[in-house]
Image 1 (cartoon, rainbow, N blue to C red):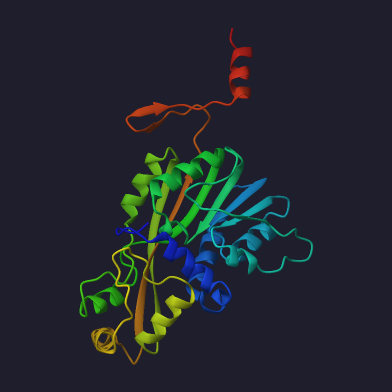
Image 2 (cartoon, one colour; image 1 turned 30 degrees about the vertical axis):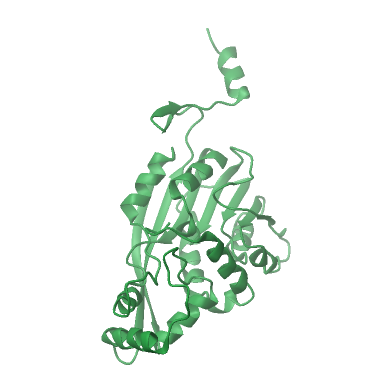
Length: 294
């Protein structure tokens, strides 16, 4: 989630257009996905059902299917072209099921997943607290949510360079780790663990960075963005401002990567929302409680 309101239709159109060539340019996304998959090993998991939220072309979904061959993997993304670009399955492994849906309104049965995995998708949420509440709903009691997203230091060089040209938002500004953690807790998820790291990519020039962002659908989608084409003079001002970051002929682009893990609440655990606390029980749980009363 960004600190500016997003034009979510523009976000979706950008990812639709980027689907065909996404795998060629999404180098950073694959690296973070690998690091997030490594974190799965920190937990003693034997999941039966897995959700890959914001799966893109499905590399994480396929990796999870290989890692947990007995599990049923559901790959969800709101971009149909991304789902159509899904890579082929591996020999001996079933291809994950695919669902085209919005993370803000998951069409999934409550309490149905042991693991929810989400790599670099939640930053595009229009209501991150609501998205976490939806993920809490679909997690089984004790199920694990494991996610990565971007923090506010992401692309700070490019943001500063654009600010030298005009005052319009040109680079998405993401919320920080502490605010994300508060939203996790507020959604009713329990035992959250949050951490962060900075990764830096280097480019031969600033234009290469801009082209890559456009190629993966990650360019500016703030509602207050300029809608007209960028003029040559303004672009020249941005490129000149980026020169101050050049080191040894290379141009850095910093990404602040936030990682989070949290567990689904046990059945009946009260969840505070809107000034009230709500506890949810399944009929089976209530029936079992009555049977065990002295």
